[in-house]
Length: 317
Image 1 (cartoon, rainbow, N blue to C red):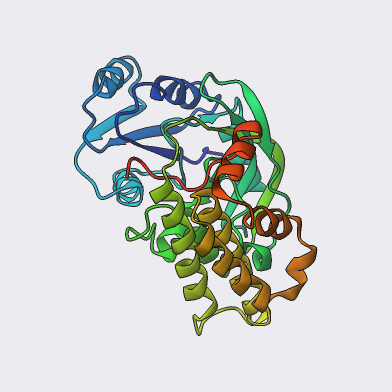
Image 2: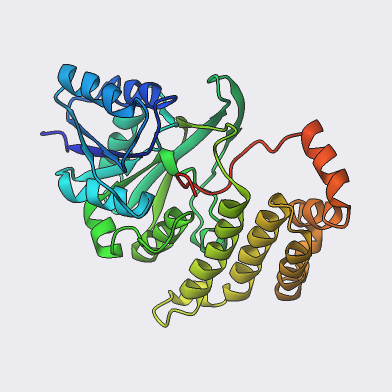
């Protein structure tokens, strides 16, 4: 049986500090049919020299340099140039774990009805040291409707399902992945594999306050659009209020992370109004209680215990 071609896209912009490790993690995969496309948005550092060097050594990698409006457009353009039956994207500072692609293909072949498969994800720091992990858990489209619990680099999708979903929404800069997962889940189940398939890197350049706010606002937009869609699956219609509450909670957490405490408290109150049960939710309690503190005290707490994960997936501002 012929193995399916897997197409992986990396969007990049001034990624010289990290992209070598990303490329190595892709090209070192023990899977025979792989194409790798890097879409560069106009880097002015050494990214192009790195890409030229790798492309000269390995014909599985091709790269293009052209302006884009952000990650969504760059990834869509890469996928449009690709031929794979299975597609994915990975950021220019993230990594695949050994064997991830082969494991994803095996999982998709074993479950022909699913639209995508996803694994778990490690969290690494700027030097590549392990600092935590994201255990995503079994597929639950009710939960996914309001809260993006998947680790984006650890998701592999059927091209036909992504095409039916309309590809990535290019108007979104931070939560385009959540929007796509919701659309894929409307078509059918996704499947979880309890194995570390990727690693996301957390470093000082990961996010800005502007990006964190935008992630919160976009989450509200994406979830509101989904729950108000007349085509929303019947089994999800009873979960509209809870999904919106989760979106407001996410927005509150984002604005809290951006030190916009008044707006964070507004969103948290709206979340609680929609789902009073959040009073027993640790995410809500931690954010709501600390949002009552002054900004200076919160900054001291963050220095003592920095956030273990990033919010959003944008390049630049």
